[in-house]
Length: 214
Ligand code: MD3
Ligand code: FE
Image 1 (cartoon, helix red, strand yellow):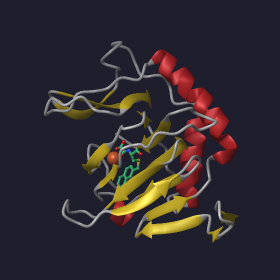
Image 2 (cartoon, helix red, strand yellow):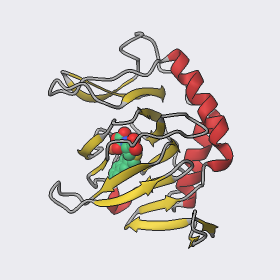
Image 3 (cartoon, protein in one colour):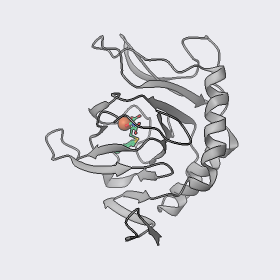
């Protein structure tokens, strides 16, 4: 058990919905190493705001590491083995990324998760992600692991139908959520990031989203 700011006891492992497990603070011990690795990844593959197929520039800036990276442009959403901006491969997935993702997946009941893609999302105040499903991966039997770093955000998640009611879940620095099984195709989004300062990231929120793309 851990305690929140008011000293209330919180379970370290909370089932948000069938198949979706919140591990509060699970990444805290490795957060400095993860953030140093984000800086190295972004030096090789800079954060950029991609364009949706509908022609909108996303408010969230993104980059990737691993064998495959998630990209969007006017042609659609897909995984690509190369960075369209450099023409070369994405930076390799740092060992610290791989380890935290497979460890969290195992703790959530998904042993043997070996991500081949990590989408790194960077939110500035006001940046948001409107509700969507993640369905560009080849095999939806694999879970998705997400690690929140820096400023807190309000995460929204619903059900497999866009009209399903959206629940709000606050996510803080060091929190990990593992989404699999019946939750894998749930609609989800992130409300506009509030202004703030975090000792580890300044005015930013960073989210690492680990997937098995191929
Ligand atoms: C629930 N990113 O990159 S990660 C995304 O905080 C994305 O940056 C958000 O949604 C972020 O696609 C949320 C949490 C997440 C990821 C995949 C899911 C939640 C999910 C798949 C199914 C259900
Ligand atoms: Fe998503």
